Length: 148
Image (tube, rainbow, N blue to C red; front, side, top):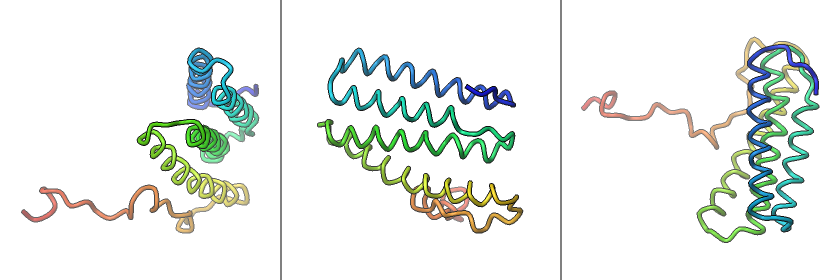
């Protein structure tokens, strides 16, 4: 594993690695060598390998995106496995929402990373919209700002 430049980067990577280890141990305990458990382990192994091999440039924006893309891809794969093997309708619905939202976020992050790799972008108005996953960005009406 490459040495990371900043303390926050080390903390993020450590937290993700611990999460993956705990999830892998749980999957092994809970699912043994089932197809679901094996798929989850394989998906997490790919995710961790891809996150660890992400080039650390020293630019927090680029480095964040480079690590979050495989992280989201791993979440999509795990959600896909739940749709194949899971039974609970609420868990399946959550998996569908994860696939829909994180697929959009993956595309947005890849596009933004491509822009940032070319040059700094002082006017990020062209950043891909995440409105579909975060709402329309409208001011929410509350009793305080609704004039009541």
